[in-house]
Amino acid sequence: MLEHGGRLRAAAQRYGIPLSDWLDLSTGIAPYHPPLPSISSCAWTRLPEPEDGLEVAARQYYGARAVLPVAGSQSAIQALPRLRGSARIGIVSPCYAEHAEAWRRAGHRVVELCEASVPRALDQLDVLVVVNPNNPTGQLIAPQRLLEWRSELAAYGGWLVVDEAFMDCTPQHSLAEHSHLPGLIVLRSFGKFFGLAGARLGFVLAHTGLLRSLARLLGPWTVNGPTRQLGAVLLADQSAQQRQRECLHCDGQRLTDLLRRHDLAPLGGCALFQWWVSDDAALLHDFLARRGILTRFFAQPSSVRFGLPTDIGWARLDQALQFFREQHP
Image (cartoon, rainbow, N blue to C red; front, top):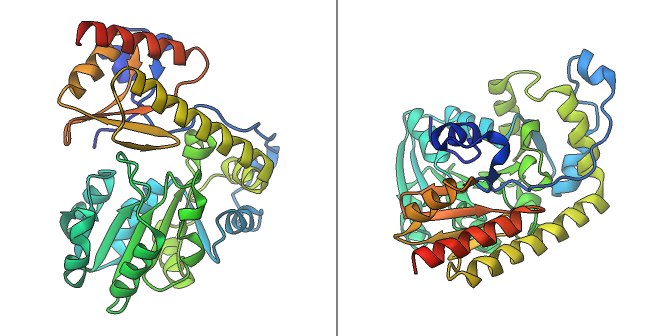
């Protein structure tokens, strides 16, 4: 298993700090969520059915012609490599490591690329994977550029897979409305923006033929009934979405400003996280963890990703970073 953020129990055991005393900034998940609807008893007692309004709400929310609900976008990341024969896969890196792992595990040849090298490599690839905005760098690639890459790949049966897990705060950059085009597959996450990662809900946006193939591979009832009901309500609530978006943009800027005050200016990020690159990243990660603040450390490149605090967490992070700078000027 690859390393991920959110492993709070493991950190509590490693550092000997009770679980309740931690401030978890190790994920890019919103630290708050819209009001939750009540879940009907039949959602618990009956098998999930696709005519419950979830797909309709998702198509409207994303502006896509066809969607497939999945148990978190991670399930699609692991399944998509099984829909192609042996292929050469390009991945714009650094990015979410599960993409490369899934394609390698399925026996494909994976080459990691920087954005600038993609145009020269396209004619040698069967699939190109892009995380947009990128995790952990926060970098955004312009939609028009991505569509040009899709066109070139699709001309000989290739795919462009765009993981838009962190796109909800910047929907103007999404390729969702183009996801019916041949060779384009867009992955979306429900839990990050809505702050409900435990629901395990995501969506694949693509042309209907590919979605049917993926649905057959995944099998029936991939998303449980209560999650389907929850998703249908929140994806249709535009006012709650707008409030969530405004709060996340505000807190994303607040986090950026806080880090800059302590000479930890982020190299990149988005509304849900900020990314600081330094040779001292491991030192800072451990310093904070010993004070019950969990961040996400990356070895390559040496960096720390900060998620959003909430409530008293802001003051706690501010104070800990002040102590760090006093001890490591």
